[in-house]
Amino acid sequence: MKRFYQLAAAAGLALAMASPSFAADLPRPAYKAPVYVAPLFSWTGFYIGLNGGYAWGDADWSGTSGSASTKPKGGLLGGTVGFNYQTGAWVWGLEGDFDAAWIKDTATGTGICAAAPGCETKSDWFGTVRGRIGYAWDRWMPYITGGGAFANAKLTTATGASDSNTQFGWTVGLGVEYAFMGNWSAKLEYLYADLGSATCSSGVCTTDTDVDIKMNIVRVGLNYRF
Image (tube, rainbow, N blue to C red; front, side, top):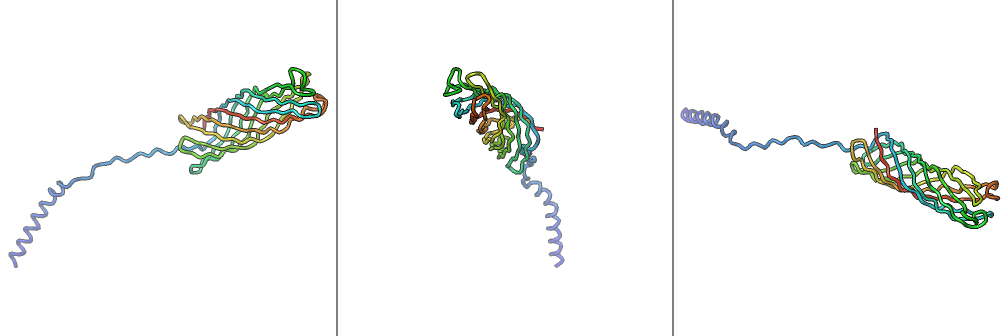
């Protein structure tokens, strides 16, 4: 029995001496550096910007004094202010813009619009206040938009007499915005605007004459988000 204990102790001592070298021979897992995950882009914040584009539409004169169908068209250039708030992938926003406009057309028709050059419909400025709902794919954000639209309408008869109105209506549209560098983003959007019916008063058009104004607008914009 004493011999057995001596052999067991010797075996234990040999195993203890061999363990460090055995462990050293085992393969070690390769070191992996921590992976850096870039934070997702956030659209939240106030922003200001510039926008410009082109508008075209219809402005139909109708009344007992005469009628004509003008098709105003021209450029726009102005500024934009807004705010976005992002929750998950959804972006909720409010945006307003005001543009100088060079939108006009002249057409001959009947009555007060019969003589050359006819009746003219003209807008010198255009603006909107709209809500926006977007869905963000990181720096890309397609969106839908809708709200109020307003513009001036200068109505001039064939005799040169004119009347001016400030029109309020509604607008809907869609667009896409891309954040291309830091806080800068660029957008492309389409709007349809119904500005209601402007009135050429009886003092200018002999009798009150309605002019229904509808517009299509394509604009590009450049925004800076704070």
